[in-house]
Image 1: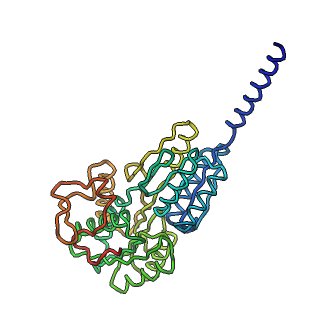
Image 2: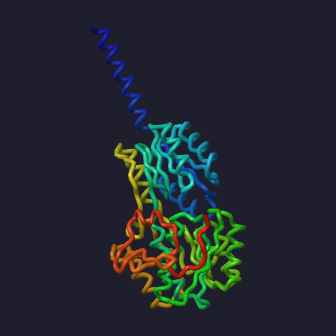
Length: 357
């Protein structure tokens, strides 16, 4: 009995020490980025969220990242390597990583995955996104007032719903304050390609644009606007350092609170494969300071729209709104559902040009 008791006590002590060691192990969190952390745009802002995690939890977390991962087979390889390396939670931060994330998630059921801007969810795979179109609506109001040529240039990355939502929201807002506004749209077919984005910006300026908007990640459009002496709206992070005279404002994606909340859930054992789509009201969309040259009445109008969206009193897609071909999309007072927004594949009435396949 004494031997058995000693054995039991030794076993209990060993298990207790092992449990304590496990409890002392940091939560390992990985990030897969589509661009470089120095893009001062989409990836930069996600990395600010990663750094916020380290600031919040200290030694209780260990974060790693891989930058400039191309969408497709390379993404699947990188995500799988992270899972094999013992990460507890992996964030994949580009729409084109969705299938690769789902494939690896099915192979590693004990690892938790979160995919940004996608729609595929599994028992161990959550999704999260920001309502970029809300920010576009506010900046569209400003752009509509600030243009003198009545031509606003817009650089799109890929013709996916989140980008099309932003173009339509910005146009509707601009037209609401300036019925003469026209949009010129150039597709870069890249999230981050400074040379292509610079060429697109130059092309739009040649077409008469005196305000540039972008749904791409580099600072090139802001640099071009600064050099040309025109206005621009930044995307994803504050780009005023690259266009102090050009930037009207920037739409900033704030991921800090979300990342902290999700890692806390892992620590607490309460993590679930949730679907999150936050906006201005959730502080997932915030704005850089408005340029001092924006007239006070325009600033007040933009701030009122921002606050109304945050309070749920204004939805950028409220009818009457027609599709580009003139057919009715939303009747008077009707508001677009989230499912309709996620499937958006058309321009609204008044926008010229076609959406590439």
